[in-house]
Structures are given as C-alpha cells and as structure tokens.
Image (cartoon, rainbow, N blue to C red; front, side, top):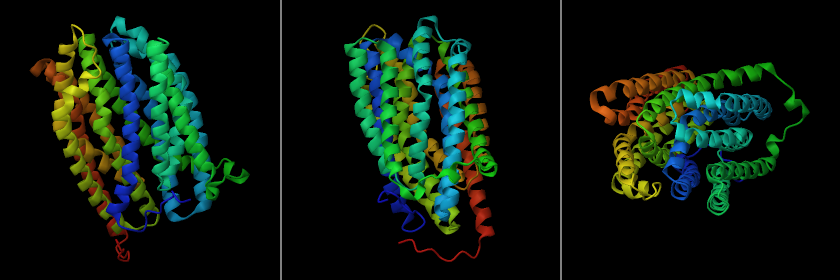
Length: 456
C-alpha cells in the first residue's frame, strides 16, 4: 500500500514530478535495452541486420499500439474509479479490462502472424532485409501476450499513483535483456532472432514482477462476483478504448506509408533512419512519462471532481515538459553524432549512414518541444475521459505525415522526408491544445462552485 498514491490532495507540481521521475527512469531503462539491442545487432551482425530491425518498426508498432490503446483506455476508467473511491466499481473495471485485453491480444497475435509478410512486402521492404525483418516480427508478435501482461499490470499500478514498481520491473528487464542479448547474439550467434527472444523474455520478467506486487494489494482482490461479465462496464471500457485504437492505427498506417517512401531510397537510407529511430525513444521517453503523470493526475481528480486541481496540473505539466524538452534538444544536438556511431558498424558505408542519421536527429531535436506539448494536452484529455479528440489528432498526424512524405521530397529531395515526423507533431499539437483548453473551460463552467483547493 505504501506505493499507492492518492493524487487528489497535495501540491500538483510536486506530485507530477515525483510520479514522473520513476517513469522517466523506467522509460530510459526500456530505451536502454532497446538501444543495446540495436547496438549489438548493428555492431555484431552488421548494417543490413540493423536495417532489417528498422524495416519492422511501423508494422510492429501498428500491432503493439492496438494492445496499448486498449490498456490505456481501460486504465482511464480504473484511475477515475480509484479517484472516486468507489472500490466495488474499481474491481469490476479491472476484471472486465483483463477480459477485453486478453481477447484483443489473441486477435493481434493471429493478425500479425498472418499479415506480417504481406505488410512488409506492401511497404517495399528491400529483398535483402525481408527475411531478417520477418524473423524479428514473428517472434515479437508471438510474444504479444507478454506485452499485454506488462502493459495491463503497469497501467493498473500507475492508476493507483504507483510509478515506482514499473521502474523496478523495467530495471530488472533491462539487465536481463542486455545479458541475454550478449548471450544469444554475440556468444550463440542467433543474430536477429536472438535479439527478439531476449526482448520477449525480459518483458515477461517485468510483467511477472508487476503481477506479484498487484497480488499484494488486498483492496483490489477479485472475487467471483467481480469476474462476472457486466455488459455496461465492457461497453464503457470499449467506448474509452476504441477511439484510442483508431488513433494509433491511423498514426501507424501513416508511419508505414512513410516507411515505404524511405525504403525506396535503399538499405543505407533505411539504416540511417533506424539508427535515429533507436534514439527517438530517448527523445520521447520523458514526454511519455509526463503524459502518464498528466493522465493519472487528471483522471484521479476528475473522478473526485476537483477541477481547480486539474487546471493546476495542466499548468505544471506544460512548464515541466517545455523545460525538459529544451534540455534534451540541446544534448542531442551536441552529442547526437557520437551516440549514433554506437549503432553503425565501421565499414565503407558508415560515413554515409551517419550523415543520414544525424540530419534526421537534428531536425527532430529542433522541434522536440511540439512533441512534448502534444503528449501533455493529449494525456490531459484522456484523463478527462475524452478519447475522441486524441483520435482526431491521430487523423491530423496521418494527413501531415503522409502529405509531407509524399510532397516535400518533390521540393527538397530526400531532405524533405526528415520533416515528415515533425510536421505531424506540430499539426496534432495545435489541435490538441485547442481541444484541451476548451474542454477544461467547459468543465469549469459545469462545476463553478467547487470549493477552493489547498495546493500545499
């Protein structure tokens, strides 16, 4: 119980910082083992193998984000129930969330195994990358049940204000993944398959640890009546989750179109993009963490109908996100090249791949603050139970990303592709800012007589 945190009382800025710090560290740990995955494959197997990993990115994310969208949508309801102190409804929401996510995972696993090859071929994946990409994709998709277990357990814990347990779980997973990477890839010579197996096993250990901690929380121990199917609760959970699923699908499809354009420039260009995309996680990790903090803080206080605290939380999240994004941008611009070199084997093509990678990283770093604001506004809206506006923002990302990928190269050559991602951020961020501020204004007018909240 000591890790459970009621965020309906206390200073919003302090609560958000203290909640976000373990998430930031956990996300950095996750990115660390993903980066080491890429480093070991890039250095130990070669540039072609690194490009094979990159060729699967958007296809795997499409499948992964379907799972994550359902866990995120269900977590909104769970967090609001926790904030409202309705324990009976809380347990029912958890039980129905587990049921929904289990069914979705089965569907995604079958879909990935059946559609994996056609999707990669549709994206113009170079012939010399296809076999390696399929090997990685099939193993990762087969481990989808592990992904949903971790996402579900960590989402439940975050709903209760516990961001420390996911941090510990990710730290254990990171160490495991690195050790298994070295064993499977460098010692046993399993190549891309070894990297995929290491990741799945590491995620299994992370989910197992979270599950053990959840079992200790007596107030959510599920009984027979909690597991009985209740259509009203399922309908409510699907209502929250479905727009997020559509949002992620649209974003992923836009990314797949972008990937198909990138693939046309050859495997060296794909390798450069892959190297930068492995650092993209570091760029994004703090944004994701502040986003989770915003969702949890907002949802708990919306459950308690504390509107003034919601507005104070948005202000705090905005300031913190701007400061952190600026710091990361400066760091990446200065140290980006040495970091990118870690992924690229020293051969005849390394210089060209590094130039491609750094150009992309530099442009993303310059406009990183728009990504952080996107997460702040999107996650605040999700905490309010508004998943429609984030869905619309997904369509905006889709249009901006595809439009930029198809049109800008006609004007600027291959350099234009580097702007596809950041224009998607900017377009979605502008819309989400408007939607978020309008929603908060609306609920403030609906609850005008809320008593003044002590912020200390």
